[in-house]
Image (tube, rainbow, N blue to C red; front, side, top):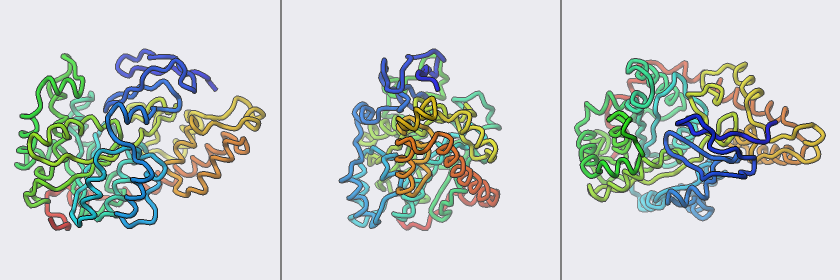
Length: 417
């Protein structure tokens, strides 16, 4: 097992730094929607990222308030285990619920491959739970414009990918009567509300602010400068008059990966200028690549990801061959010193997908003490992820074109505003 890893700048392919597992010789972590740089095999330092981004930690007191307001005995595993770790103005949403006021959920996905991977599931799994707990309407944006502008793909291919990705999303059992899914390139031209909201946002953001927010260069196509505004628009209820009956003051909560925060910082900056409410956010940690937590799982690298189309054989091969291990170099050393769960990818993945807290803690103790070897924890993960993926594939088979169109038809949802 290698003791050092080269951390690559994804824009140049050159090493940023050679760093050991403890992050020695580390450079500052960098996270945006397109790149993740960290020198530590433990992944991004999220405490530092909270300070850098200016968001707030989701602490124990906030979780306790969440439970009281939501009237649940326990929160979702992704929340209680700190996968969703930071927020912007979550208290505003909880205040609304306490006052008997309604809010809506918004999240999204950019189609860049035929199949979604496990990392794509995380915001949707948590969003589904939020929808059920709060009985909230949900807006899901498919950013096919971004998929086209930022990848070497034809429009036809992006549309094909979008349809498959939408089926993956629907297969997570969202409520059709409370969920509206749309593709930007299809819906934007049909909706006056969307276009008017977009115009208001664009007018209030300058070229200097755009460059400052997103760092686009002179060589980037003009479309890249514009599509972030499309992603900001669903933060405001004015974009969906058919759902919110023309109301412009319905609060919005956005569960998303921390790498997406940049778009909504811009939306929150603009909101007071156009007399709209700032959207609230809940951020998740980045789902790590198989090769280690120093990079996130990516659809562009098939060996870094477990895809929702993978077979049982492919899942087993990828985990056994590519999953970074926190185990020791020899069985004897491992039994003496134990494994390092803080860098072990099989254990990290189990924190997302093993719902039983007691079982997860037993695995942690056994692996950390050396009683459980790396092969065993990989075997546990293979069995868990195989069930997750194959169950998903079964549900997806039942998603017809008519069902897809039902979710994507602009309509009044059952939630009355």
